[in-house]
Image (cartoon, rainbow, N blue to C red; front, side, top):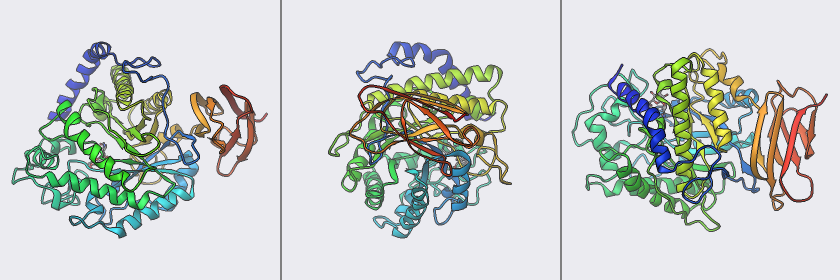
Length: 491
Ligand code: 9MR
C-alpha cells in the first residue's frame, strides 16, 4: 500500500468512527431534517433552465482524455454521444476544459480552442443536453515536470494550468507510482502556493485565472445549453489546508472569478467545489458563502465529488468494505447538505463519483450513490465516459454494469419544485409543487426496457410521448397544490 493510500485509509476509518460524533456536535443534518443554519436540508433547490424548470441532471464527465490531447478535446465523437444518449438517456455532461488551452499565452485567449468547445457543446445542445464546463486540473499542471503530460506511464502527470503560470521555484517533483502522490511533492506544493499567492510572489495568477473564466463566459453567456461553470476541479491549497485554504484563498478566488464571470454572463450557474483532499472522502468542508452579484438572485451551486477511500483502494462493495463505504457516504451526504446550506441553500451537483465497475458489488454501490443523489435532489456526472473499466464501455465497446445502472426513468425537467421522486425499471412517481408561471411541460425520460410501448399516466395530462427520444412531456392539472404523477407502461 502506498503512503497516501495508507494515510487515506486512516482518515477514512477515523471519519467513520469519529466524524459521526463530530457531525452530531456540529449540528450537521440527518437525512430529511433541517440544517442548523436556517436553510432547510429537506427542501433541496435545483438549477433552472431558461423556461424556469427545475433540472435533474444525469450524465458523464467527458472526458479524462481531454487532459492531454494537444487540441484539448476529449477523444469522444458525435457517434459516441449518440450511443450514450440512446443507451442511457443522459441529458447532462460535465465537459472538461483547461486553463492551458483557454490562455496559452498570458492575456491571450485562444478563440479557436473556444470554437472547438462550442462545436462540442453544439453536439450536446442538438440532443437536448445541458452542459457544465469544468475548468479541470490535476496536480496543478502538465508543466510540473519536464516529462509533461504525454510521456507519463501513469496516465498523465498533472494537467490544467499553462506552463507560463507554473512556478515550482526549482523545488523537486520526484516521480511517484500513483498520480495523487504528486500532490505531496515539494515542487507541486510550491506551484499551488504561488497560484494562491500564499508566497506573496504571484498576485497576478488568480487574476489571470478569473479573467480566463470571463473569456469563457463571454463565449457561452448566450448559449442556452451551457447551464453551469465549475470554477476549479478538485482545488488543492498547497501548504494551506482545510479551513485556512477553503475560507481563505479558495473562497477569495471563487468570489473574484464569480465577479469576473458576471461582467459577461448573468445567466449561467457558478459551481464551487470544496478542497478535494479529505472532503471527497467525507470530511466536512469549511467553504464560506460566495456572493453572486447577478440581478435576480444568486445562481451558485455546490459541486462536490465523492470518492470513498474503500472504493478507490479497490476494496469493492461487499462485507466490511461495504459497511465502511456506506458510513463514509452517509458522513459525506450530511456534510454536503450542510455546506450547501452555508452557501445559501444552493443546488447540489455531484461533479464526480466513479469506480472500477468490475469490482465486486460495483453495481450496488452505483445504485446506492444515485439513490443518495435522488434523496438530496442532487445532479450527477459520473467519472467518466472514457473507455475502460471505470466507464460505461470497455475499450472494445462492451458495456459495463454502469449502462444498465444509469438507464433508469427520471424526471429531467420539472415545471415546479420537486418534492420527491422515485423510479423502478417500469415505473416512475413524481411529487412536485407546480409553478404556474412556467409554461413549458415537465419532461420525463423513460427507457425502452421498461416502457416499450404506450404509457399510462395518472395525476397529469400527457402532452407528448416520443418513443424515439424516450421523452414524455406532461402538464399538471389546473388548480393549486402539490401534484403526484405516476407513469407505468400501458396495459
Ligand atoms: O481517472 C483519471 C486517471 O486516469 C488519471 O491518471 C488521473 C490524473 O490525471 O486523473 C483521474 O481522474 C481523476 C479526475 O481528474 C479528478 N477526480 C478523480 C478522478 C479519478 O481519480
